[in-house]
Amino acid sequence: MEERPVYPAGIVFLVDRSTGVPAYRQIVNQVLAALRLGRLVIGDRLPPVTEVVRQTSINVNTALKAYKTLEAQGITLAKQGVGTLIVHNPFLGKETVHLELVQRLDAVIAQAIRDGLTNDDIRLTLATALERLTTTEEKTVAQQ
Figure 1 (cartoon, rainbow, N blue to C red):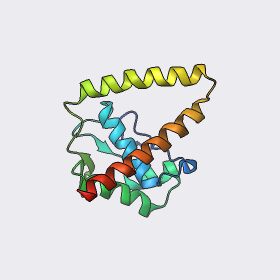
Figure 2 (figure 1 turned 60 degrees about the horizontal axis):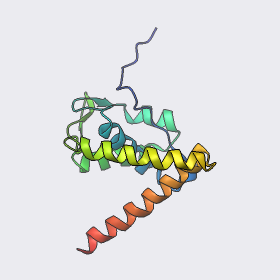
Figure 3 (figure 1 turned 30 degrees about the vertical axis):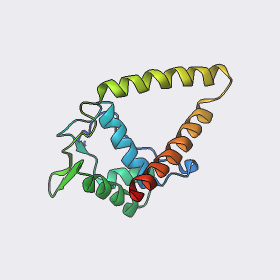
């Protein structure tokens, strides 16, 4: 039986084409979320691009764009013969902010559920708001 390499738990990539968020950005966001939540740590190896393509059915160039984006941000380093390694976690030291955000989101999501929204409704609303706010923030930074 062929032995497959083990990658960090919680890093099975999913791409939702209905969100309007580019597939490569979804992959980047999932790595960032895993870092923020401690599911990925410095030294962890990401799955090879071929595995990302297999998991998500995205084009190989899209998966490469995601990995190159992470490398350009200084988060990963691709080493031939080794793979793509996590070399930086931009969220270290932000645990308090993260915990406060989780508490606020828990309250908002609980209210949305009480108001009758489905998980899909909530995910779409959060993804839309995040994309809108991220785009607005990027424009603000670029104008400075």
